[in-house]
Image (cartoon, rainbow, N blue to C red):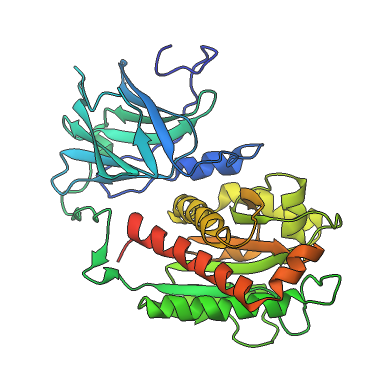
Length: 402
């Protein structure tokens, strides 16, 4: 099929695009996820595969299409001299046989070269002709990432006084490990708000505080600066939690909760990131944690399209999947783990914080077996270790500003 049409042969939508040479990290994937109706993260693997690369030259633009087998976080950067664009796909590998160099006779570019800075990161370098404008977005059925290079009008030309900064390296580490970051740990509920309560009286607020303090100790051992939204049994409003994280200009926001369900047999772990609710259960979970009615959640849904979404959604995808995998591996060494996957929902603390973040529903306190586990110090420690490992893997494999 032509690269500018979908599987049914229909012309692709014409999304808004950015022009100029300004260093830009596009969030087309995040916007596509927020505007889609169904779940976006049902795959069982954390690594996406590039199944093919296609190019096409049209009258006013050149199109590069990367076909993918599942969603992938990505970012687009410009080289210091403005002669290349570097499209980095996180947790992504090319399938065997996919060409690592594609040449094209185009007024906007000459080649696309694939490289792998790590075993799970793919970087496509596009060699440019002139100073084209660009637009970057995703399409479904089949899933693909699309980059258009377009001829700029004279009014779009960038100012020569604007300095273009070199792209940040994909891996930021010191000799001792990842660069120290500021991480906010948010144990849910507290004080007058006990959260969910198990059949035998265990309160969510106590469990998540203990796990949060254990996680704090582990992260501080790695050299990170850790800020707790609460360090004891006190009530902290949702606004106060995110205001603290924003004021401290944190790099990550990790909210810890224990889930509950009217169905006592429901058990498992699920990791959430910001988005429209994946399903009715996700909406109910967000309603409980937000303390809001379903109608108020609908109001939150409506403002997503107006939010100034920065790189945090894209990076939250990576953080969520890595944390999910770490939980299965670490906790699963000793306990059977029911993996409910990565989901999305309009959690207030994720919506109002300004950095990448996740909300981890570590177990169902309403389930008798999982309530019993949550009482055990060893289970709490393993949970904290899983969260720490997910964060550590994210910080060592994902480019974030210094």
